[in-house]
Length: 289
Image (cartoon, rainbow, N blue to C red; front, side):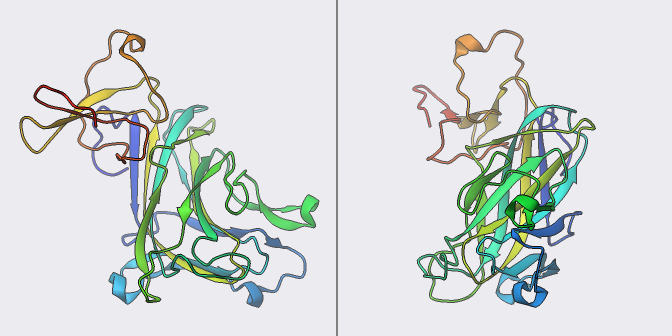
């Protein structure tokens, strides 16, 4: 948890993991490859915390790489969070910052090196890990529903792909993907823990190498929507924000006893493409944003 919590943030938890400072206890893993006749040199799986490319400053990041010889390689990082309400369904939003060198619009074997490698994020009450699946000729498969390649599953959603805008170079560039406007519902364990998991599901049948630089997570445990005014740049500029996502409520549904809450950080980031959640409130007339 970063910084002191306001009363709203006690309901809407915000975790920020800056991988230049630490690995924060994240552990890497791989799945969707054979357990029999496995040649480590062929897949060349690697994961550690190392310096990011020099053009990005050289600070440490979570590196992960592998050669997708199975046409389906899944490469991920995971971490266990504690202190949440036990046995509770929570709404979770993850924002992932990473560096990629794979431009969009390229052609690759099996799939594109950019668009063919999708980024997924999710959370589950049990530790995410690969297990040998006898139903698929004893391949290593995940013990959660992540979907397959470009399709998400019940436990992980697709947040984008690793393709960078075409810039005519093979340099790594920073990218940001997130679940803003499409929060995932996850259930906490009986001890109030929850495992975060994010990574890539690949249809590109060659090597992918990525540097994860930051992960921000919002976990909403509030049972009711909460509205608050966020101060603007001047006395006549304020934003009315609420803590729910994927839900719409009218004034008639809100009931009584809902107190205003002061908060300095938005749990959800506004995008013009999202379902409307934020309104600009100022001198009359008031115009919705």
